[in-house]
Each structure stands twice: as C-alpha cells, then as structure tokens.
Length: 244
Ligand code: FPP
Image (cartoon, rainbow, N blue to C red; front, side, top):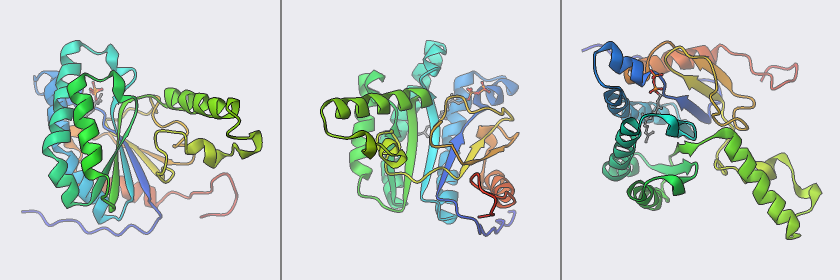
C-alpha cells in the first residue's frame, strides 16, 4: 500500500468551495451512463470531508445542483435526487461521527417532497455538530441568492426594521444562504473547466481559484493536496499592496 502523503497547511483556509465537475465525462469515457458518474462522485465525498477535517477547515461548500441543472434530462435529475436522498439519510451518522453540521444553500421548496423532507431531517439531526460545516448548494444560483437577499432587505426597509445606514456588507452577507459561514478562501473546480457557473458569486469575491484537470470521480486526498499546494504558493493581497 502506498504511504499517505503528509502535508502541512500554513495559510489560513477557513472555507473551501468545490465545483464537482466532470462526472458525465468520467462516465462517458468508460462507456457508462452519465448518472453513474454522479454515483461515483458521491463515493468521493467522505475522503474529502476527512481531508477537510485533517487540515482544520471550518466550512466546505459543494455545488450539488444548480438552478440551471433543471435543464438536464429528467432521468439524470431523478438519479441525482435519489443519490442526494440516500446521502441525507444513510450518511447522517457518519456526518455526526466527524462532527459535521449540514447547511443547505438554495431553495429546497422546488425539490420533490421526499428529497425536501430528507434535507429537513438531516439539517435537524446535525444542527449541534461543531467541527465543520458541510454546505451543500442545492437548487442554488449565485444571482438568485443575491436577488433574494435584496428582496428580504427591501422588505425590512419597507417595514422600517432597518435604516439605509444599517445596510452594510456584513448585514447583506447575513441575508445570503451562506449566512454564518466564513468568506471562501479557496475555490476548486475539477475537470479542467475554468469558470464560476453562477456559484457563490458574492462569497467568492476574494477567494483564490484553483482549476485541476482531475475529474471529480477521481478527485481524492492526493489531488486535493495538490490543489492546497498551489493555494499555499498564492500571494493574497485583498486589493491592497501588503501581502497577507
Ligand atoms: C457536474 O458534472 C456535477 C453535477 C451537476 C452534480 C454533482 C453533484 C453531486 C455529485 C452530488 C453531491 C452531493 C452532496 C451531498 C455534496 P457534469 O455532469 O456536468 O460533468 P460533465 O461536465 O463531465 O458532463
């Protein structure tokens, strides 16, 4: 058996966000239906959750289903929802064993009732866990997130619950689905595609982007460490001149 690579992260990394891309291509290369790429993708999650814990990351976001993914064939959508339901039921004990609290970003009301119900139960069962937040972006769109926050704040203003001066960046962030989570430090997209695809637009304002050619079903601890090494080499200036 090959020896587990040791790696020490010296940079602040509170929140990592993943775009788990390449599942369909991974399956096609093997002559399999696309949904089996998503199936294999699910099997990678625990290794990545554990690596996040190992590197003391406080929050990890995963783009599970975008507001645009409804345009996919119904059969693929159904399989994805089946896998999500399975995760939200069978993996809860596991999430609790690593102290993971689940957060869901996105409108779960449009999901089929059984998926919505498993989400609600999973949120409830993990709500007191404190080691790490696993933020699953589900029926999520970055623009939709921002518009919803604007509407909620406009309503508060109309109801005279908030003044214009109170509406700061922090106040706004508290109205996004990701409320309570630290800013994203690192955004990783697998499979070689180099775009953001409406993912956590506000939250990625100052994150470092790492694009890896590895397709998500092949993304493991070693591939994650390769991304972390690239992140380690980045100079983060947040628009200023001084290095962090
Ligand atoms: C992109 O690959 C991936 C998706 C649209 C869905 C990924 C979702 C999961 C694996 C579920 C994750 C669940 C949890 C609980 C975190 P693609 O199909 O667009 O790949 P392609 O570009 O090769 O076609």
